[in-house]
Length: 259
Image (cartoon, rainbow, N blue to C red; front, top):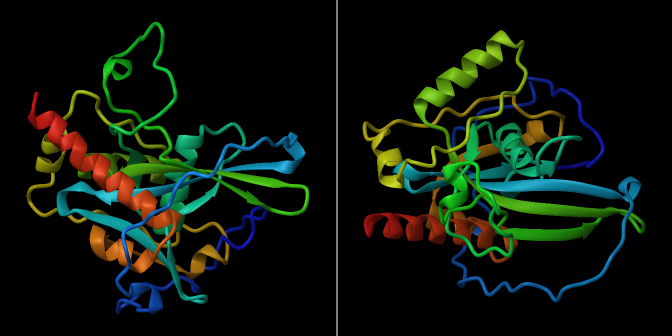
């Protein structure tokens, strides 16, 4: 993301579909991440000096792969992220940014992740009664300038199933290309059942020209095996987002198998 404060439609001629997988030094084997949370801090930023963003690791459950983006100009791998739109839910912003930067439609995946957020005191739906949540797995603070603060929340998502892909694509066409937010993951569905929907070898659709500025037009995206993706990301927060997401996915499957 070149600029946090500019968006414009990209030129379609800039965006190309790669024919070969790029390589760079970050593909070397990496040790297991030892990233730890920083100590709590106190800070104050008014609305004019605060930017809230969201990033996402998008998994294709049926093939044990995750979406990585690649910057063709600066030669590095990364997870999609960006600013939340005004009046947009942060989780929804993660889904939208994931689509814009990678071309893959996605939706947040409820998982058994540690969180300090309380459950609803008077739940109105079954989702409040499950042990699975769609809370951020990491929160990141970064300065934009000497007086402005960027707050970034990292989420875990899945590529959408074929029927959702078809319905969203149809709605998007009918709405003149406007982005369509995906429906939430069915709280009554187990991951095994979700994977069986794509048992025939379905390959998630990768849409082209979804970036919103010339910088994003330089991005390529790939669905990579989880271990390979973590090696390409190298050590750091993005790698740990993928690691935490994948471990939570495996834990949810184990929990569901025991019920």
